[in-house]
Length: 177
Image 1 (spheres, rainbow, N blue to C red):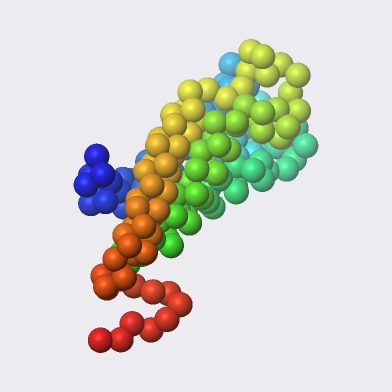
Image 2: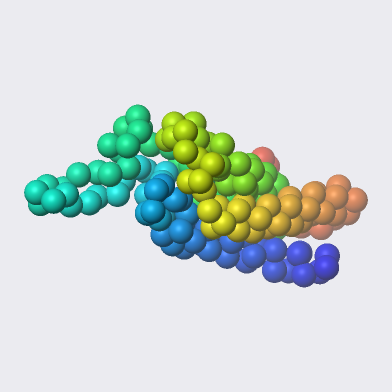
């Protein structure tokens, strides 16, 4: 398992970040009444609909407090930054640890999205309405990938400390030959 994480962990972390953004586009993230909405529509409160007069209105913004779900945007930013940190790491433990921790924080946000939706939408009917399984799938994928990448980062840090002769990339000092 350790060799798999050390060799392919970076690509697993990037794949989970990309899969997260793809899963958020599926319109089975939030249920309000008889309608299903995607994760992007839930987070940004944007669902443009046409009423019987032909006027365009934003359904989700009209049913609530007209604000976006800020915690969802934070989860999106952490997911994006973790994917970028995995993409640009240079055999160093710093970006793997930081990216793994950001992915873990994002996973906790997605796993607790039902509570955040209650705060964001202020709907007393969230016992029958609410967050569906897509949020929990995203949270579970991010939890596993974040734990693997944090493990990889600490394993690299241990190797750097135990074997100082290995040439690693340092963000603090210039490497000289």
